Image (cartoon, rainbow over all chains, first blue to last red; front, side, top):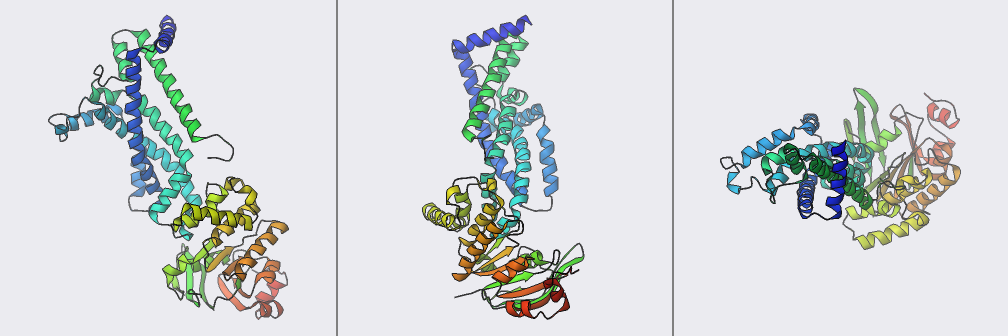
Length: 234
Length: 237
């Protein structure tokens, strides 16, 4: 209990005094997660829309696999990305291991199935609603996808926020591929793991509170920008 | 100058899970004015309209438009019994078919606003379409269908669940469209509406055409006992 209060007060002082190291770590966390989120959205949303509108032979299997991948163990993802990016691996020449780029790749792999699955649920329902209308209008496949993505944008925001939540709280994969190197790849979650390992529970808790506050802040900001929860909007 | 007509339907039919829903249908239409497809519930009116428009699969026979199938679909629009509203504002719903055809945003908006005025939705232009009342939604759906200036519009019981005032407004919109040269095929089981709108009538029962004749002939001297019974308000099964 004492650690908890110490953590809270330390978090408060770290924020109030604009601790340089905290700011650096927090900014890197946001930078890595937002980049992974943006790139992940570019893959997950069109993929979800395509699965909603296109009928093909293995569609149900693909959807089932995608749903199953929501529970992909991050440590395994980290390990696979590590092997691929390591010097002796197929992508070793790129020299990406232990860089923020490697962390972005790992985060993307973790969050894409989650976002695609959630987005697919919304887009499938919307497609059921729009199907006859769009078919009657002779809409092309790409126009269907654009229409669904635009009209379901507020529901897709939920998928993106879920991806953000998973990404910013991710530790296993990015610890392996990033290496938690000070001033290079250290982010909030890896710093928390490090401080906990050192027995610095108060500092670890302080970083944890900052992480939670950051997550809530970003969620509120996105909700506000997306104008959700307003009358007559979706 | 019409490119769609004459329409020739030869033995057209569709099935679902082995059950014949509609057909075989044989009819021709030179495309004058408004054609009303009449029949009791479950007679296949909706399916026939969907078959003609090409959104239901044709299992038997053929539907031949003078312009060819692809061009015909582009020259048609469909209004569903339960209007499908895009999750956008009224004006964006109206702009949608124009934007699909690469009309510039400015021109599309101008035309959409003109149509909103024409159908009495000018005060709702920036409201979300799905929160409109049933009558307003149907007027919007009809305006969205007509805004692309199709040669032919299919309407599937467009006033089925609407009150008298909304029905009158929608019929006025349709009469204007017909006066400006748009052809209309409307499915209904509302006898009053059929009398008000029809130039000719197709009477459908059990998925087959029982009678196809000019409206006056159909209402004054129906040829089949089923049509007579239907006009008398008897239950036709």
